[in-house]
Image (cartoon, rainbow, N blue to C red; front, top):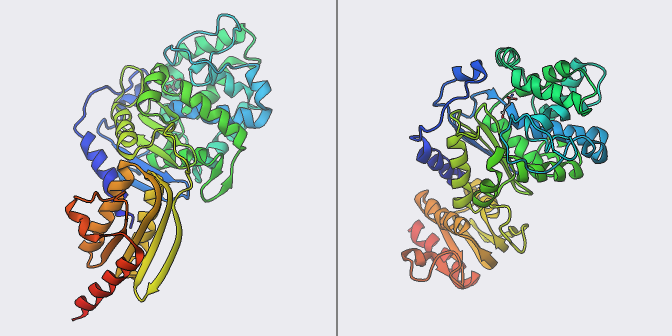
Length: 427
Ligand code: GLU
């Protein structure tokens, strides 16, 4: 089911399969050992429905994608004021592993660079490093809905080569940001970075962020206030020092990691997980960035797209004649509204011979939603059914389009045509 969206994702993945730019991270030796061709894309809608394309079961280490989640845990455990007293929220414009603090406050500039992420680990209240790691692992696992496991080899590799992070840890101690032993804090940080996830796990974590901290199936993980702050720093600082370009071109709160993953979030609507381990010079997945860009452009996912009613969708479904179902769509229709309509109609296709999609009360519709609804009609016809559109203003199918034959100006006309079609078919 939901084949149309599945085809979109498969198509977007195929479009980028040939891209071989970038290089594996090699400053952590174990990361250079992965298959450079691994490629996966997952999309989890706010109701938990998940689309997967490519190597969606392939596991990789979460790396810096852990940072927003540990920051969220710190906010959840000790509150905003205490976290703000240790970590800023200003984009740094610096590399992720820059040995730096804010020149005035002597605090890490934000929680998405290593200095801020290491400080965030130290804020998680726990009696020992193991207890701290257990809290972190459980918190991430709640976002995913399964227990995440540690990649012991990556953890050891990272720990053995972590001079730069050690320098950051001791610098933070010298400025009074770290109260605990820097090596113990770093050990937990390396472990959090070495937790294994799949693209689908990331999409689910993204969907839980998109729902304000509520896992689509398992319920609340943290508060909406925590998530609002977390998404804010993902917008301004999530994509290393390319955050400005990312917000303009893609427009989704996101975080990438040197393991090759990216999580991106459309608040209220969906989470995206992408995996491809070849990185650009900022440390983000080359194919991952391009896939997110295409998804955002082709499906209209920029989070600043202004709509009047994001809840627009199916308002009414009824069966005025035997095996004829009418689906009434209201409001402004963008990708996720269209996805819901298409999925419901496809899912119910055994219940009807004719589906009448009434879009006469749709106020505004974007290109992605238009082509999905038009393709739905084509798909229904290909499966021996009929899809009629009540579209008096030609919102979905232009009047001059050759598919105009399935377009009607009122429900009564469409129902008359449905009766005729059913009669002809039974002759
Ligand atoms: N564990 C990595 C480090 O601190 C994370 C880097 C990243 O994904 O950006 O070097």
